[in-house]
Image (cartoon, chains in turn purple, green, orange, brown):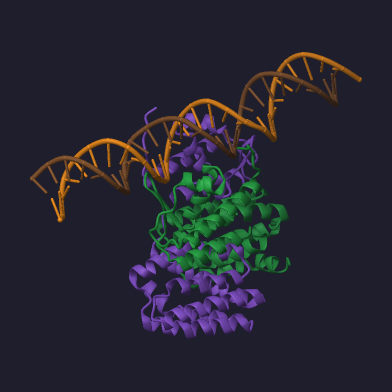
Length: 234
Length: 234
DNA sequence: CAAACCAATCTGGTTAACCAATTTAGATTA
DNA sequence: TAATCTAAATTGGTTAACCAGATTGGTTTG
């Protein structure tokens, strides 16, 4: 067999092709929840790809909850019906990488919610962690240094305090993209950072005093400039 | 070396241990953005784990945007600073699997937003896909059959029409969990399904006529029962 | 002295052989 | 005939050897 090292994008393309073939197989064979997929060896040969590439594709579909591998047994169709399976596979294949505007839009949505939830559910330990992040941010800004990381860590501590692991996970997923784009586009100047201290404090106090409406409102204020920035980019 | 086959949970635990050791390494060596991690071979030996397990852990951290592998070159620290790196690694290690309540809470948040965005951004093609999903749902309900899958596919088509790939991705991630729990707890009875047809139609019409406020409002009405169900579970 | 070159080395990715738990099918037995 | 047992085949997971591109450090060359 011809040997070829794949670049990252080529690998991603290959993975999509494999997923597409798995979709076709599921449709053609009318596989239903609980049914077993052919073995990895068989599929890799049938698709003309390496077994490791096939395994990566399967792991991706496992991440999306569509397949379930059991050691020494097989890979099985998840407990969602064929209709949902087909629809989700199509969607996954068409997904494209999020741009900065998407990320900011998503971030604002998530954070208005997590601020509210944090006010409702925060424990004393959550408060302590938020306070730590808050102080680290203040100290960095006071020294006149860039504090994008500390900024985001404070927001992550709020997401954690919200007590919803899905929302927390989603915040984690978008955070690196937010940080790099912030630094790239210099979204936060020094004035903005100083104002940020007060705004962060205000949010913290609202969450501490368990006032969900106020927490959300203050988060909205905090995002006012970012909001406009985001919606004026296009 | 002793050979051992790991169960799924053991494997997950092992992966967390590896990630934890990578975190310690990054902290101890004060690795900064752009720095190169030791090679996979070296790390796997140092940590006392197999190279494939180590690779899986690295891939996980790549998914969260913390590392970046380059073929024939090395694995590099992403362009977020050491502070954010440390904070995010700690968060990732503490993440727990979402329960049904989390999923529903997250779903409602995402869908109120995507309904609004879909009204603003939907293309004609989006509309056609939504209409297809809508008809498939109606037909299934009319036949008196369970239509949870078709229900969720309609909602996914709205998420897609929202034009925000992050939100679309997040909807895809939570959908399987929603479907299986719906079927498990029988959230949708027949009456509810019939009402669902009208509500889906109402949402579709609002999006078609590009009325974001109305779309969101009708989505909220659609979720009214689910909302209560979710908040009365505890 | 600096720039260009080249070979030895190191890298993530790939492959194929291997492992043991699981499944399965046929033989055996009650 | 049906239940039970056993051995062979099948499975996802693991390992180690291998691949070719990238890196590096020393040498040569202008």
